Image (cartoon, rainbow, N blue to C red; front, top):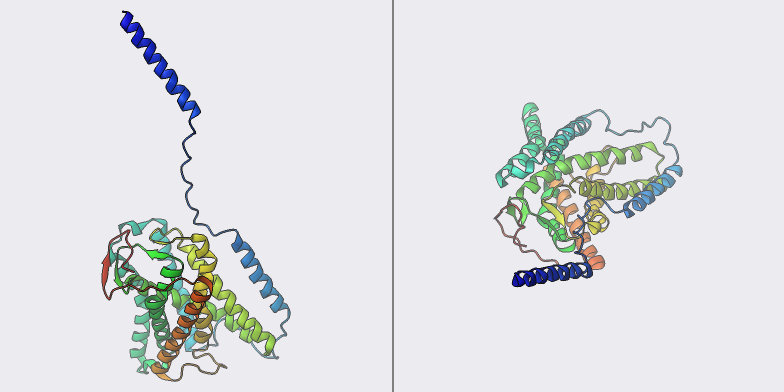
Length: 341
C-alpha cells in the first residue's frame, strides 16, 4: 500500500507539473485566415477617380450639330443586326457560366468537358456567320458579322498564345484546370476568349458610338472618346477578374496586385482593340481594315502586335520580371497542376 501511495503522489505531482507547464507555455497560433478574394478597398478610389474624370469631360462637351442622332446601336443595317445578336447571345453564355460557377459543376469537368462547353458556347457566333453567308450568296468578306468574327478570332488567339505568358511571369497567374494545352494555355481558354471578346467589343462599341454621335466634333470630343476607351479598358479587365474570382482553378500569387496592377495590365489589350474594332465598318470612320477578309486579318494582326509591344514595355518598366515561355505544342495536364511553363 505504501508503494501505491507513492505512485499516486507521483502521478498527482506529474499532473500538476503538466498543468503548470501548459499555463506557462504560449497559446497555439490561431489558424490562418482565409485569403479574401474580394477586391481591395483601393479600387473604390480608382473607380471614383475614373467617374470624376468622366463627369468633368462630359460637362465640357458641346451638343452635336442640329439633326444629328445620338446612337448607342448602329444605324439600321447589317452591323446593327450583328451587334444586337451578340448582345442577346451574351445573355446565353453569361447565364451558362453563371450556372456552372454557382453550382460548382466545374468540379466534375474533365479536359474534354471544358473543351466541349467552351467550344459549344463559341460555335454559334461563328456558325451563324457561315450559315448567313451561304444563304444569300454574298462573299463572307462583304458581311460585317463574318469580318467582325475573324477580327476577334485572330486577336483572341494572339492574346492567349502570347499575352497569357505575361500574366504567368508578371502576375504569377496560373491555370490548374484539367486541360489540353497549346503553348501552356488551356485550349478551352482560346475558345472561351472568343465569346468573351465578342461581347466585350460590342459593349464597348455602344459607349464609343454614343460619344462619337452625341457631342459636337472637336478636341473635347476626341479627349472624351480617348478617356472612355481608357476607362472601359480598365473596367472591363477588372470586372473579368472579379467575376471569375471564385473559380478556384485560375489563381494569382498576389490577388491584390491582380486587381490593381493586373487590371491595368490586362486593360492594355483593350486600349488598342476597342478603338480599332469600333472603326470596323463604322459609318463616318476612316476604314482601318481595308477590304475583304484579308484586310480584316491584317488589321487584327497589327493590333495584336501593338498590344504585345505595349505589354513588354510595361513589363520592363513597371515589373522588371523576366519573361519565360516554356510551353509545349501539345500538353495534357490534370486538375490541380499548371503546365510546363
